[in-house]
Length: 264
Image 1: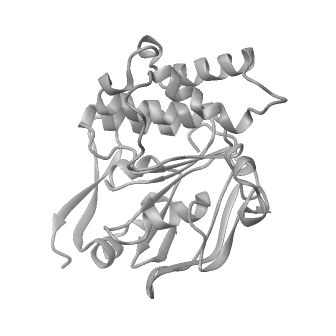
Image 2 (image 1 turned 90 degrees about the vertical axis):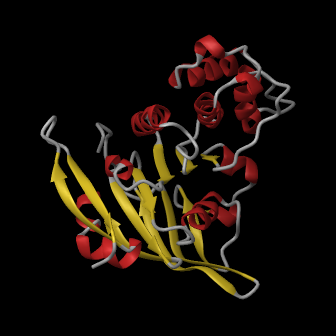
Image 3 (image 1 turned 180 degrees about the vertical axis):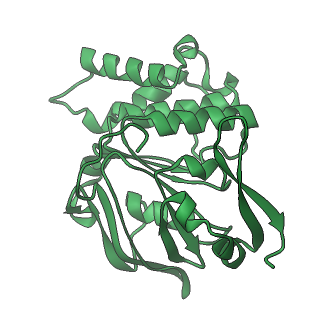
């Protein structure tokens, strides 16, 4: 599991999750449990429910049916501060004020831990510095946010999430709109983070680095397991409408998906 220690039990769990808006069912009967230290990928075609599922797991939206548990406790029974101390989210369209520096943006991640009785201190400085180091942006700490590239800003969003010191990190298509070098760099970073991660991904070959994949289709969870077990030619045709088969890269022996248009 990417050199992570597997622990029994669920860190984050959704049971029979459904969600609808104005009579439109966006998610229906989804149940899954994410293990401590796991990197779970969520894949599926556009409109399959990936982002909706992430928002329910994060507590950003409330399910029409079912419940989410974080560390064994019902999410609905926890305060926003308690949730933010255990779980961080990097949304697909995350926004940060242009007038602040990268350092100041990452410092915002400490907000759930601050209060009148626990003001900013040296430990917060150390945590923020470590979060910035984890994403290799020390040299840009004092740069204005608006001068950073798309990849640097995405790393900054991840650093801010890490500054929360979460046990679980949820990311919604973190490689969206980045060039290929930045995509590969972000994915390696996410895979190496010492936290439980749940990441929605668009590219199936990029998703192969996850420990398990949850395959979504039409708001339902249609498969959950090892990438090589769930991404069968039959499922690729049924869910994604493409033909696919496995290839072995002669350079390093890695298995890759060869995808072609058409489901038959």
